[in-house]
Image 1 (spheres, rainbow, N blue to C red):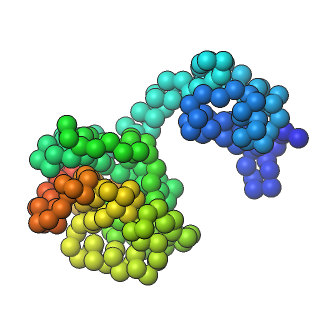
Image 2 (cartoon, rainbow, N blue to C red; image 1 turned 180 degrees about the vertical axis):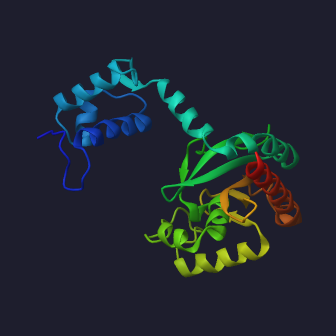
Length: 256
């Protein structure tokens, strides 16, 4: 039976259902009450009531006999993104970095134990993958994420890595001891590599964004296909450019 009362886990059932519908529509694009009822395991009438409520509030639009997310979510997302100082202080520096490297760049912050991209910029030849602004990623699978883990507080790192590490590709580091060893290397050299650990065929170089007191604020990276991200340029020249950009962004974020 559908209820607005807290479930055993202390969560409000109706709220969980509404956000379950929102996430379902994010994945599917367009759905009706019948599809949502089957996907979420709720009655068709409950699905219909939630859809109508979200529609009346302006968060859904009717499309092809079903419902889709409305552009109202853009306003919420933009508000959430712009509250981060790094968004404002990193744009120019990241644009220059991508111009120099000629691939794709991203700025990441950590939220609820995952990495969230708050800015991305791509050169003409840069490849677009499944990530975009707002994409949530497992920190251990990316150069930005490993940069963050290497320099964040040990207690916070232990909290983030407490659960099993998902294995996304054959090269993902899913063993905690192996990951810790890599994080130590990253701390020593100041940058991280992602060698096809999230997406096969893609490599990246990341570096942490640190405040004046060495507090971790986020991380940046540039990424591209293995056919171009290779050799001395990839292993030496790109890391220096990424670290320099991260240092500038850190200074601007500290004193802005």
